[in-house]
Amino acid sequence: MTMVQQQLPPTRYHIDRPEALVLYRDMVLGRTFEDTCAQMYYRGKMFGFVHLYNGQEAVSTGVIKAMRPDDYVTSTYRDHVHALSKGVPARSVMAELFGKATGCSKGRGGSMHLFSAEHNLLGGFAFVAEGIPIATGAGFTAVYKGTDQVSACFFGDGATNNGQFFECLNMAALWNLPVLYVVENNLWSIGMYHHRASSVIEIYKKADAFGIPGVRVDGMDVLAVRAVAKEAIERARAGGGPTLIECTTYRFRGHSLADPDELRDPAEKEFWRKQDPIPRLAAFVREQELASAEELKAIDQEIRAEIDDAVLFAEESPEPPIDELYRFQFAEDA
Ligand SMILES: Cc1ncc(C[n+]2csc(CCOP(=O)(O)OP(=O)(O)O)c2C)c(N)n1
Image 1: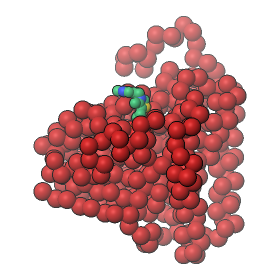
Image 2 (image 1 turned 60 degrees about the horizontal axis):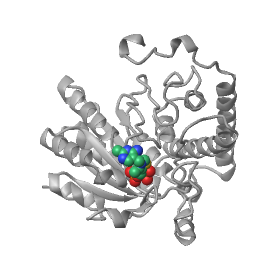
Image 3 (image 1 turned 30 degrees about the vertical axis):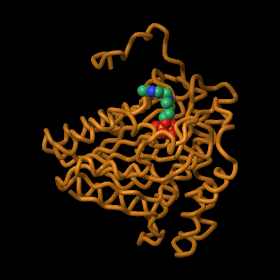
Image 4 (image 1 turned 90 degrees about the horizontal axis):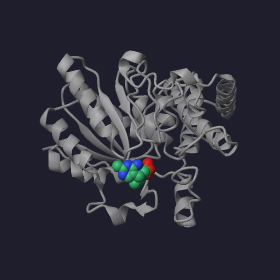
C-alpha cells in the first residue's frame, strides 16, 4: 500500500517560458470567462443555476494542461473552466450558456451539461458525484481497448461523502484503472462546512482504504498542482493505477449566482483571496524573468478580446429550432 502525503509544497518548480505562459493564459481565460458570465447572467442572457469557478483555476489548469488532448475529463455543475482548459472554444461554451444551437451541447445542456466528444470532455453533471462513475468507466474503456489514455474527474469535497466516490475508488483500485480523482476541496458544499460533514477531514487519507496513493496539494498554486498531476498521470499511463488528489482551494464567489454568499466569514474569504492563484503565478513568472509585466498584460488583453468575441458569437447565434425539440435525446439522432 502506498501513501503519499504532500502538504502545501513550495512554489518553486522548474518550468520553461512557453509552458508558464500556457498556464497563465489558461487561468486568465477561466477567470475572465467566469466574470463575464456573471455579467451576462444578471443581464438575463442565461437561465437556471450558474456555478462559477473563480478562485479554483489552478486546479483545472494544473491538471488538464498536464494531460494529453485525447485523455478524458469529467466535471460537475461547476464545469465551464474545465471545458475551456480541455480546449473547448470559449465561443462554444458561451453559446451553450446562452442556450444557442452553436453551443457545445447544441443548446440543450446549458451551464451544467457541457459536453464535447471532440475534446473528450465527457460532461458536466448536475448530480453531485455523478462524473465519478463516468470517469471510472472511461478509465476502464482505456484499459479494455488497450489504449494508454488517462481519465480525470473533478469534484467537490461534498461529493466525497457520496457513495459513488467509495464505490468507484474501490473498482478503480481493484482493476488498476488509469484515473485521477481530483477533489477540489473548497471547504464548502453550498452552506455546509466541510469539517461538519466529513468524518475524516483530510480527504486524501481516504485513499488509504483502497490502497492507492493519496496526495494533498496546495490548489492555489498551479505549479504544485501541475507537479502532482504529472506524477499521477505518468503512473496511470504506465499501468500504475489511480490516484486521489486533494487540492485545497476556495471559491471566491457564492455557490451559484443565485447565492447571496452570506454564510461564509468575511475574514475567511479575505484569507483565501490573498492566495489568488493568478497573481501568484504572475509574480513567479516575473521573478523568474520568464515574461515581463507588459507581456502578461498583452495576454490579459488578448483573452478579453476572445471573451468579447465569444459573447458576440453567442448573442448572434440562432436558438435551436422548435421542431428539433426532441432531437439529440438518443445518440442516433446526433
Ligand atoms: C445527488 C445530489 N444531492 C444534492 C444535490 C444538491 N447540491 C448541489 S451542489 C451541492 C453541494 C456540493 O458541494 P461540493 O461537492 O463540495 O462541490 P462545490 O459546489 O463546492 O464545488 C449539493 C448538495 C445535488 N445536486 N445532487
